[in-house]
Amino acid sequence: MNTQKICIIGDGLAGLTTAAILSEENIRIDLYSPKVEKKIKNDNRTTAISESNYRFLKKELHLKKLEYAWPCNNINLFYQKGSNYLNFINFNEKEKKLMYIVQNNKFKNTLTNIVIKKKNIKILKSAITKINFNSGSVYVKNKKIIYDLIVLSVGSQSFLYNKIDQGRSIKKDYKEVAITAFVKHNSKIENPSQFFLKEGPLAILPLKKNVFSLVWSINYKFLKKNKKNIKILINKKINEIIDKKVKKKISNINNFNIYLNLKKKYFKKNTLIIGDGLHAVHPIAGQGFNLVLRDIMKLKELINKNLKLGLLMKESAILKDFYQARKPENTLVGLGIDLTNTFFKENKIFSPLKDLLLKNLNNFQFIKKISKKIADSGVR
Image (cartoon, rainbow, N blue to C red; front, side, top):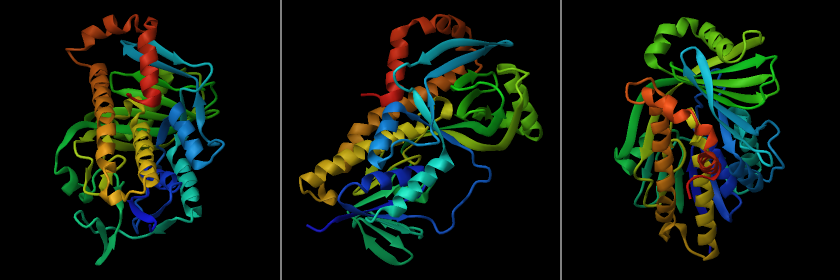
């Protein structure tokens, strides 16, 4: 039997990770990268990777460790009550890590270097103009190329998704942006914290000693009102929640739109969606890329099983099995994150209940245990 051939469209984190991991199988891969890369100035976004997903990456990518990944044993959650910040729950581990925090650009460089060295991956600097789902082929300009499997990983807004989901998605425009920044400091901040502020959730994510990434989700109106003074506002908030005496330098301020988009359809014929195009969720819980990694893990498992049985991917039930295995968790986690975000917003329904519900939450060990398990390995 001839070696089966797949194409992965998109060279972001999801596309590169999919290519690097699937390259371990006996298949040929064409990785399509757009001719013109849209580089976002000062893009300092970070990604939280759970312990189980970190082990999966190390094993599949043949890495002893990611040198720049910051390990975390402790996570504290706070909510604002008046001028006070109450620590309502604490997660900690002694024997293993809760998560690893990586800077997206550094992780992307690692993946790119791995992919470049793979003999069964061909990187093509071409844009896909059309997909023929019936024949399982893509068009580069007017050239038709047939594949056994097509993986779409081109962000969240690509026209290539239109004929797959046909608008059937769970969507929500939060009318919010995530403000991101780097903060250099002289304090001992070694573990992440999440603060549920009246303006929106703010996360502190350590990247290395004396440097953390800040992610603050706020609504459009608040940003528009404070855009000219956003650096001053960030400095003020850090002073409030950490310590006024801490010396700090804020840099690389940027913002990114936030929305919920959970696809109801994952595939058509032999074409599958992977990444943000499949499920875009609020950054409040840091679960977005962890869902992607679990998707890739399941896809690899199904392809491996299929190849061992000597079956053609194009004629198999791989994508149907993938859909049935992954949709429940992706939907439940996405909607759960949305509910959490709604709960912590200032509103007449939930605000009176917060004190009552959160007062003794840290004492309920079974809730903490379940939360840690879901954050680490998902819903099973």
